[in-house]
Length: 181
Image 1 (cartoon, rainbow, N blue to C red):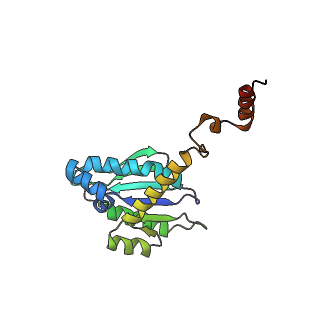
Image 2 (cartoon, one colour):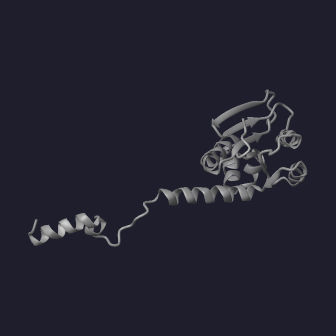
Image 3 (cartoon, rainbow, N blue to C red):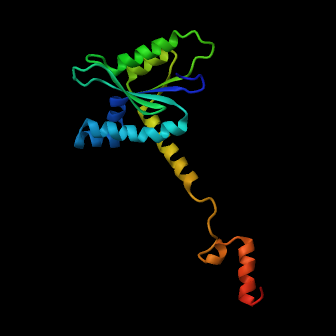
């Protein structure tokens, strides 16, 4: 299941949507489903590069349905709570179970929410807290780092093809220009 070196990141989904400007706009213009999808898309690459095990928790939103769990990747899953269970109570139960673990090195537990009461509760259980804005900043930083790594590392010194060649090819081309082979 969860390895001691892989922290568990619990994300209060609707709280994050309500606190990120872009997700709030998506929710207000197009509804909750597109906003949830946009949040998950933002998290997929971040989770892959961060090393977290992550679970996004969404309230049942007045649907009389049992809880459900959807796996998006090996490290990211989405949990919809059961009827009448809030994301807050789900997160509190997970924190309580981590608090009562007796393993010598319990894994890190981080909760991403900007709900002040939730923050106090999870910190009281010994979990770490991350604000919605901090999570957004972490995702943006991770995206920027990935893009920077994907850029070519060596750039040409000028616009001429000659400068893009390695030293051996440049010498050979110079010989051809001089008429020597």
